[in-house]
Amino acid sequence: MSHWNYRVIRKHHPEPDSVTYHVHEVYYREDGGIDGWTQESVAPMGETAEELREDIRYFLHAFRRPILEVQETDEGSTLVFDDTDNAINDGHYFELMDRASVALDYIYQFLGSHPLMRKDKTLKDLYEKAEESLAELYQRAGQLEFDRNSS
Image (cartoon, rainbow, N blue to C red):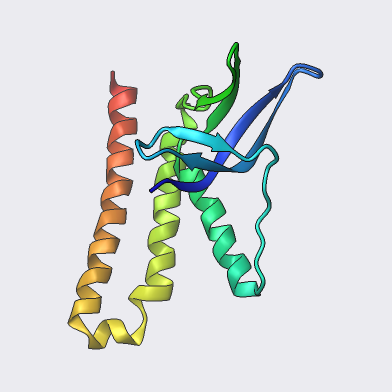
């Protein structure tokens, strides 16, 4: 059975020389290859506020996947992975460390200090795993920056 999801698509405009990014529905074949996509970009919508919130969540998931780019060929348009946004700059390491630190603080404020965490061992254990993973992410990003600057 084929499926679809939201994806970010980069479009180059020759006149004026510019680039824009849009969210489209992308449809896949059984083998996972791209079968097609919506001609026009799509906007989040729902029949209730809750449905709209859920659709926006799916839109945000599009940023977890590689950005695609429309490429024109003799056979027509096709989507390819956009490799232009993959460059790592000097600020990315600290930025990731900062975000991990903010996430640690956030989950402590809203989860770690919740009364159920003190009462239910299973919930507390799960919370601690999440907290440890974020702390490890922070440390690993710092180690990568240190290693990069030491070479």
